[in-house]
Length: 218
Image 1: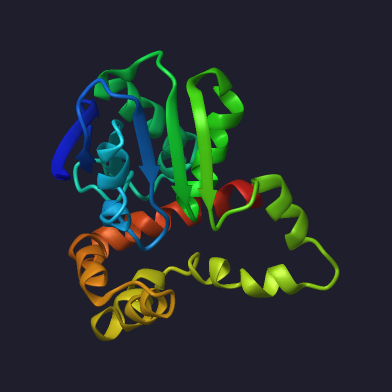
Image 2: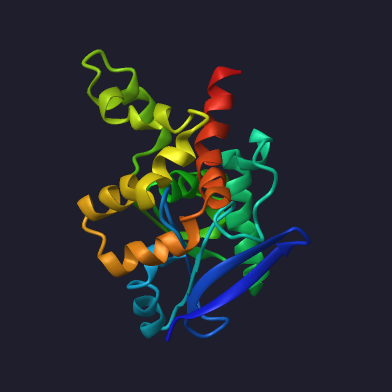
């Protein structure tokens, strides 16, 4: 049965995780996307455990209250730091040097592409949902028909100073509507909001986007 645990990777970084399966079994690391949390994988972590794997799904940097460095410093939320977190969580779970299976959804998929590229010797398999390879995605953003740029215009809205207030306004109506439109059950929405339904957490979640925007404007 999945359990809520914590994994500390550094003195200032402790991640909340959902985990299942026997310690030492082949590892599956699952990375959630934006406006989600470790609860994104509530229905999935038990499946690999039942097949003899160890599944670990963390609430990532900014989402875990004890892994929330200064959000005013974009470098703290650069995608390289998020990738470092993924590898550090694996190592802190006693899989240092071992190969593991990596799964990512949305922003978690963007993060997952990086260790697959940089540490192929560590990746036993890679599964990415709802996120193309970053190079392919960037190319589509530049296509003359503008279709992908139109579909991704909400990314720019997340860079606005009041983005957290907008997302959380009216009992987080924007976020509730977005998740519901994507088929997320009401009970799962409440679990995500138990983590993200406050301004410090939402500001930290949006810091992922702001870090990316800072790099592109540099």
